[in-house]
Length: 412
Image (cartoon, rainbow, N blue to C red; front, side, top):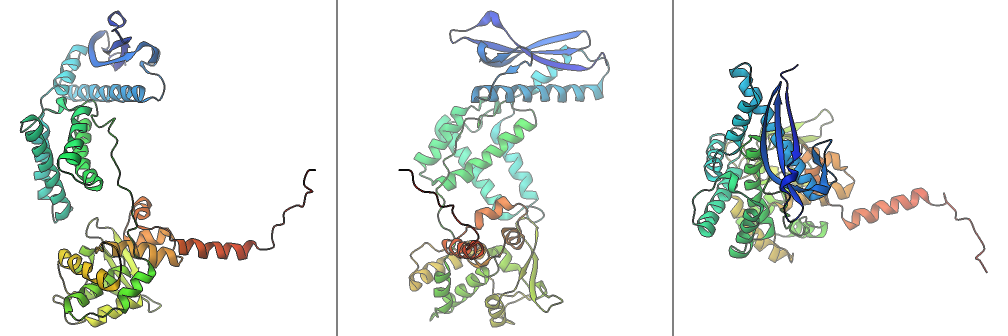
């Protein structure tokens, strides 16, 4: 149609700076009407492709520029679509004004972040968890404290966010607060989410996180080895708190259930299949994903031990996660396990030591852990040296005497 919207980009070559860069301009065309605007960025002449109206190559500079231009293009089309619902015979200048009005409006980071946190809180207990909400509030507080400390401000426009702002924030968390890499990664990811939402809504046309490279923590061994698990199984304690902690921890080691999921298991979650095998049929508290877990001997014995003791038909007594982690430190000491033992390691132990190392395929492990994506399972399930050794022994038997190296006389 003659009134279709077209957006293109070109260089303002008569304004080349001392670095050989030219301003990138945009052009909106609707029918016979035109309106040009500045894309508020520059590019080297050598990187520009006139035909496509984009930067050439896959360098950071080129891909970053092209991403920004694509975002502008999407935003202009969105403004045009909105205007089309309100009026007829739209001209290019009207779309330009609508686009620039949205692009430069002073939507502020903390106001936007707070609105997101408030809306998230209303969904807690429905389709959002309290623990994630607390993490979100903590991330909000860190950004707020950073603004006050660094800039003496309580808020900042989205359009003022730059890569320097992100670098300064990382420095503040890492050097000023002395937080660990893993903690920083979680806190910064909440801010990054706000930025992505702002870009999707057209509030921002560029990503200040584009050049940010987070410092990923070194992955340590999170699972217990089989000898360590056996030490805990065979250890008996004089205090009831330690014995209770031991039993709940082992229950998770042999079911893979996370702390919140262990707490909610009831008698009616135990289901007998047609072959008389008992299963735990439940769903993840965190995601709502169903998971079906065969009930092994150890957790079955633990259930029987506490049958009738717990209230409300729950399988095990309910205690806090901090209670368990506090007593797990003592258990590690008694058992000679020279590691910082936490309850969540039981889930990793189930995936790696109990399931994967005994031949259960990773797809089944993921299903029992209640994962929707195997990438999540890969975080939990690590192949142990014992598993590799056993698999190689099987392979050696299978290929033994099947192949023979051709004997060739060595060159003289």
